[in-house]
Image 1: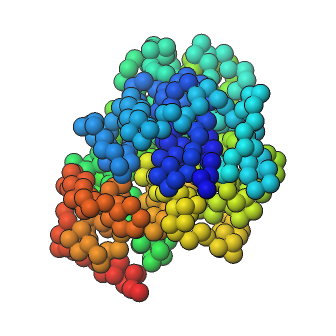
Image 2: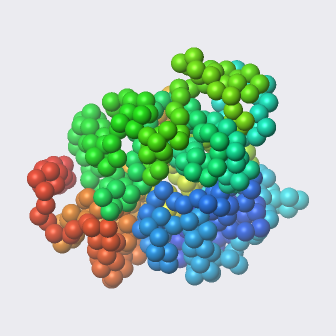
Image 3: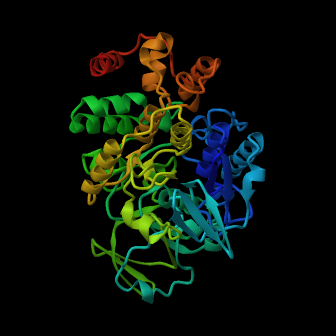
Length: 496
């Protein structure tokens, strides 16, 4: 018997979930609150944090799904190119007729062994529900004493609402935060006519250039080896190795005139941005500690310095917001602005038939782990892989609860490998001797997850070798001394 599935959201997560559910014989209906698909990549004011001039900070290899090649030759595609890719993906897999545009879901609740969705004046019942409405739609502006007194002509806002530098031409702008949107907006403003740009941050992160020595940095830092090492080595050693990669690629912030970050990369964090640190070095961006107060147009910082500014832009993160979920669901998953307690961000043992897609926070691009999560859901519900046991799921939920108060940010490679293993599509190293180094140290390209398991493709090895070699990765088993040491570690860690 065919099962009807409601998919909430027509962004990358909702589209890829519907594609794989349909491939397993389910009948997905996609509810999209806007009149166009694409989620964030649609670039709609008020519904997207993507501005017209934005380019990805993830390479084109990792900003794609496994069954549709990107047409862009840009290493880092523009937002418009990503939207075009998603539109082509929806057309290729006949998803557009499944989308109910302009139909926001107002409420989801359990109904016996199914689910009721309220949308406007209507209510629909489904056998299963996938929540893929997006993790990054509710920007957080932290409290600052006196912020409500700010009288600058450009006002205060979030980088989520930034739509280009033209309205801020000739203005003195303060950008708060050190995540990617803050650094990219600060860099753009400093090069496109702002009178001055000051960045204020609670702590200095390491900043990794998007492109270094001819290789996209997400190919270097988000690898399978990084996951295996984290499983086999002390956290301090993994921290050291990651910091070494980052500093070798782009130096440390204090070398550019920014504050020195914490020696631990895990404590400091890392952001990908190509132009930010060079602009700090040129004096076109000034870095200050966090602001302590605002009075009129004057901002005071923790070091006692003051700046008069015309506008303040906050790039200070997002709250997890799923207001349409019933109180029962919210209570069971312990939902708040940061946490959602579920087995690998996906299933809860007390909510069979409900799955979440894309609701975790991470460094790195989402396309590859989103597809792997979608495949795990489809394979589990379709019977291709065993469903997680109730015991396992309850332990996973308890682990989530025990980690409250700890950093919640994950890494793209950790998320991707977790979903790949759950879906049974992690390629065994011993089966691909000619691809050992690429599988360990190369990019986690979507093609690598079509080598093995359900939906393996006969041309996946050729495609992955091409993807890995595109920016200089090699596929032989010889290599540098450090790589041979890494390989010995991995062999020891994966025995049995």
